[in-house]
Amino acid sequence: MAVSSSAARYEPEGVGGQEPAGRFWSVRRSPAAFVALVLLLAAALLLYDVASVRADRPVGAWRRRLADEFATRPLDDPWVIAGAGSAVVLGLVLIVLALTPGLRGLLPMRRDSAVLRAGIERRAAAVVLRDRGLQVPGVRTVHVRVGRRRVRVRAQAHFRDLHEVRADLDEVLEDGIAGLGLARQPALTVQVRRPKG
Image (cartoon, rainbow, N blue to C red; front, side):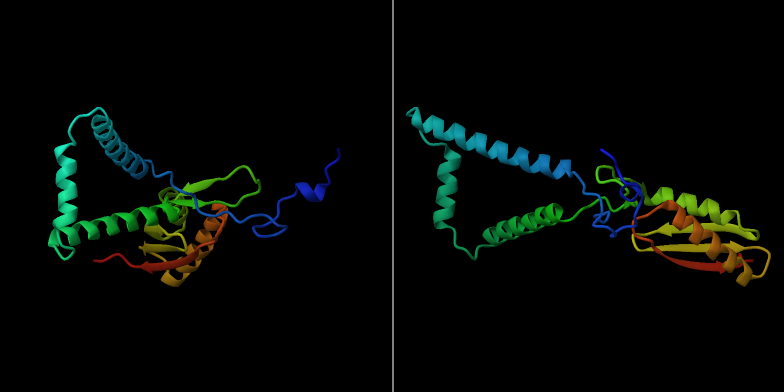
């Protein structure tokens, strides 16, 4: 079966029906393990008590007390309100964890394959761009912060005109950002100053 050359070539994101590279989803093992452990312990305790009642033993004191508290305590009691508020907050946190991708420190890279995804950590991207910025003549120090939508660069220049250094930094860093191969090209903000003193 022959494959045409047009089917094998790389097309930019969103062209030719290719899916865009979305953010990576966190596995979130710790919250899932915590919820599963709590539910397992509660189910085991309830199952033990039900089996014990079926075996003609008395109902557990905790169950009697819990049923009595539910029957007699009013809804405007501070403990009832605090327990309900805690349950609502915990539920909202779990819903947010379930519906948000997480892994904010990992930037997705362009995809040229439907089965392979790549990403780069924001810290690693910042180191690459910092090293590129330090190669510009006149630059003494470079601090880079890489966000999902913007790259912020603060540099100190100890010689050369600041406008020339800024223009060179813009060019070098734009080239460096393009070389990272990110799925979404972040905007670049550069500040160049003289060192104090």
